[in-house]
Amino acid sequence: MKKILVTGGLGYIGSHTVVELQNSGFEVVIIDNLANSSIDVLEGITNITKTPPTFERLDLRVKADVTEFFKEHTNIAGIIHFAASKAVGESVENPLLYYENNLHTLVYLLQECRAHNINNFIFSSSCTVYGEPDNLPITEDAPVKPATSPYGNTKQISEEILKDTCAISNLKSIALRYFNPIGAHKTAEIGELPAGVPQNLVPFITQTAAGVRKELSVFGDDYPTADGSCVRDYIHVVDLAKAHVIALQRLMDNKNETQFEVFNLGTGRGSSVLEVVNSFEKTTGEKLNYKIVDRRPGDVISVYADTKKANEVLGWKATKTMEDALESAWKWEQKIRKKKE
Ligand code: NAD
Ligand code: WQD
Image 1 (cartoon, helix red, strand yellow):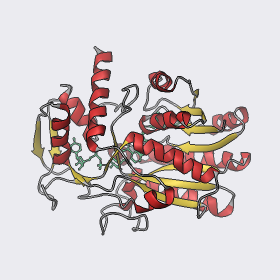
Image 2 (cartoon, rainbow, N blue to C red):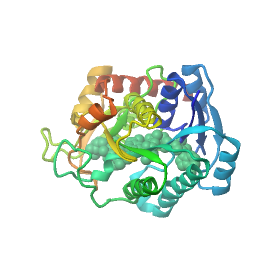
Image 3 (tube, rainbow, N blue to C red):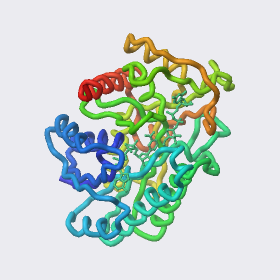
């Protein structure tokens, strides 16, 4: 059984990936400091896979602890690095937190990779690196635009750090550029757990339907899109999780074409905010209270992936629909509300 380290493995995307790794026969060790997750997620994962992953509560910013971890845990065949801070607005308020948490942690991990000859490294990047794209759908060779937030900047710099490290070592790395992950596991054992008021669309929708929020604000209906609201490529988190297992296997089998590779992970379909709202109402039968408000500063107009490279080179394709994702997100929201009662 190959042992894989998943950092941020109790977080939203990490937890779904741990499930897919275990279901594919990998042994998983999770590092998480619970900064944006709950220890209960461990139970959720175990309820699905019937196998508790090893868990180390550890802050990756503490270099000595990271070094100690790799002394204790030997024979790690690969790393999937999710741990990071991810709130765009917060990164503008507190850039140093983002540069420390998203960059120092990557450097410390890569230093350990070199020390322990761990050569397979999957990194969570983001479509945010493309900014407002010149052409749609977005291919991987579209230019990386100057970042509009410290968060976005950390993803660009991280990719550079990985590329430079691959160039001078045996490290092989894949940066996966996620579009907009949504949904939850179909069992409702794990899902997204936004802290405070959700910034992202789908958790705001489900919390509004659950009565936690009064109404959803739709940020703008005067964009140059079909219905005037912004367009994104919403991808089911379970599809996304599966791509990590495929990417890891690609590196472990030495099937990568270059030492550093980049893939878009999206569906290739663009959906507007209003389409998501309508789809949620239709799928769940819930009426959603919403109003159109001003544009949100910093929002790009329209973003969706060209998935050709992921489909043909990586051998991965999203299979789940928007309805699957919204149904699972709603089931998950209802479950966490019940738990809180
Ligand atoms: P998340 O916040 O749910 O998960 C991140 C996990 O990392 C959390 O459990 C958190 O406690 C942990 N963590 C953070 N800093 C840590 C540290 N210093 N030491 C140990 N653990 C730490 O986020 P997510 O949505 O699952 O995102 C995972 C990754 O994917 C992040 O790198 C994020 O930037 C990237 N990403 C997310 C999205 C999205 O919309 N969710 C889109 C593109 C990229
Ligand atoms: C989606 C659409 C909003 C909330 C962010 C990060 C990006 C990436 C994914 C990590 C937009 C609209 C939202 C609401 C709304 N994360 N919206 N009312 O902005 O595409 O991307 O998450 O890498 O870096 O910026 O996602 O879910 O916030 O918004 O109308 O209450 O929904 O304007 O058009 P976004 P989102």
